[in-house]
Length: 202
Image (cartoon, rainbow, N blue to C red; front, side, top):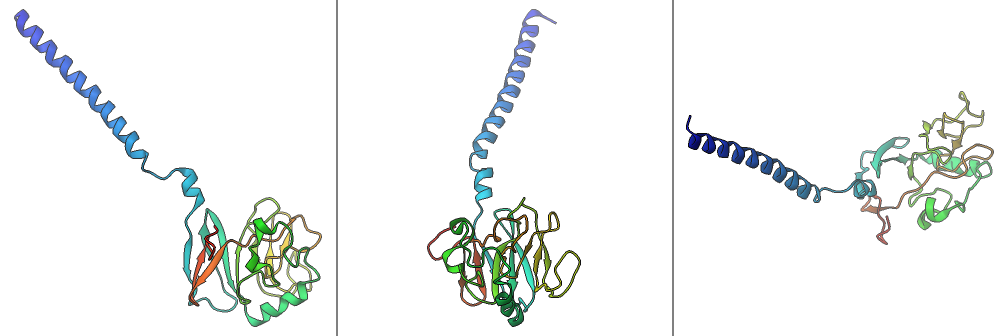
């Protein structure tokens, strides 16, 4: 092979290598540029409002949806469940939701039912003690790990904290506060929006 051909071949090899490196760098730059349009983890965690159709929710039925990575319970309380809240008033630690109201209970839920409508409870299913998720114990009556006069509610199996059917914490348990009631509102009678209310608060 002549010197001229060797030089030409070397140039082609160098040109190919340069193009390859440039292509990889271009792809990396394009990838980084496109990634700026992806929502950040912080934005994902903030979470958008969630719409829930509660048309088919039967009395005594609980549905769980996710909002901001948290389980949110929607419980349709039967008339008997609503009536039971009068019996638990004296047994819960914060019956009027006066503890940390700005964090835990919107103004429209600072009532005996902790809700906008007496028959619908909307609450974040996370215990205020160590962040465990309580189990549903909706049926009244004696049950393991529960008092004999149990009216129905929720039991955190980790350390035994109990909450009534309004998410109000019982006295003398590890959990310090009631379950959180998230911002929410109704759009008509059957559509519930979680994570937003009429004031736009979320």
